[in-house]
Length: 456
Ligand code: NAD
Image (cartoon, rainbow, N blue to C red; front, side):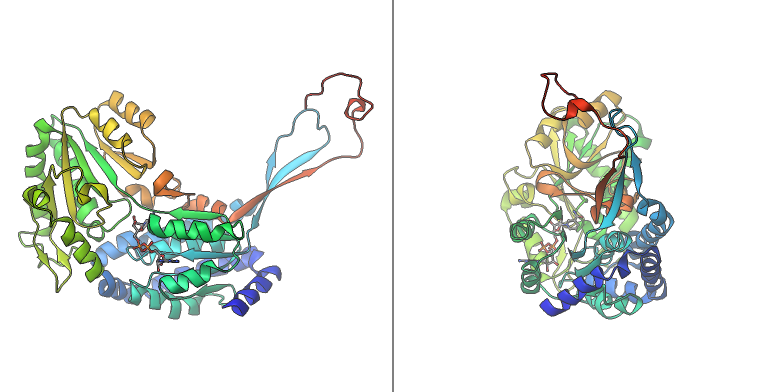
């Protein structure tokens, strides 16, 4: 590993990866891989996660095509230096920000969107002109193998390597010297990444998870209620079966609206996934037995079981869990303290919907907060009084696909941001370059001082 990484550092020093043409060719190679191997990608996502091809296209293939095209279009502009203004005293001087690649970077990714979460940062690292190692998750082996064995045939492997493996390979990689580490995964491993980075003072991006709440106001219009409920149901259950870092983890709603919300949710789930969702091929499967048992265990507490108002059936052999709604499970139960990461949806009732702000603020900062409301004053309060990586009014999950918005967490949900130009910036050093003229200078700058205070 060490000698391979040394060759990659040498390759970076050669300057090859800095040119526009190299960056464009690699982005185009990535695009070609995704387009030519679409069927294999669908097959791998089916094998690893039981994802329906339509979902796989929407969340991974299609989103990646969009992101690569966005980078191809913006690249030359992103790579150009930016002139900056200097204070008046710096007459005849100039300054600019010069974007430069960082060097050799490490990307460690998660299994739930095994293509998207590996390639979205890779696009940024390529666009910025780095050399890079990607370690996808061992828990999605078909996708991981596709990235290592097929994708790399479309790319310059002197600069872009995919190393497969689990935690022990991850730990070996973390012992090496990197110019940046970009990690997507749990806060637990995020802490291991950050500790390892200390040794070489390596900057890190940590894309972590947590519990994302959705506040649902008591709408009077049945149209608004239905739109909100459909959006909640599809983003929770039709998105890798809730195995998404920005999935709605739980809902906060006023007591008076709760039973109506439950009924509407039941109908919406039936509309989308049929009377027997187990037989529908539109809901992704749980990634593996370990996570299946973890989710099953969240329902094992008697008080939690009693709170199930819809669903709850499981099929261990096929790693299937039915969309499940819980009404007011105990707040101290694991389902309300740990990230759920699956198709279980607790609804917590409050006296007033405004109480949700205090509820949210009593928890670690979320990757995303969702609020379904038409009350402008309430919106302004949520925006001003809560803190989260992103905030979406009246929808969920869609922020992931917006190139012009930064994606990332805050506090326990992560450090740093990416997507679109933010990905380029994440893998770039914007060097401050100043040029002075020899023609002018000010006498009061030089000793002996005359007591006059100098303000630049
Ligand atoms: P994880 O932390 O277990 O694993 C993530 C990656 O780290 C994998 O590639 C894994 O092999 C590697 N790894 C595990 N142990 C390691 C170690 N000791 N040293 C080095 N590498 C190690 O997380 P996961 O199960 O893959 O993902 C679930 C978590 O990730 C959830 O908390 C979820 O919210 C979060 N997540 C966040 C985002 C985001 O964009 N913010 C996206 C997806 C998932």
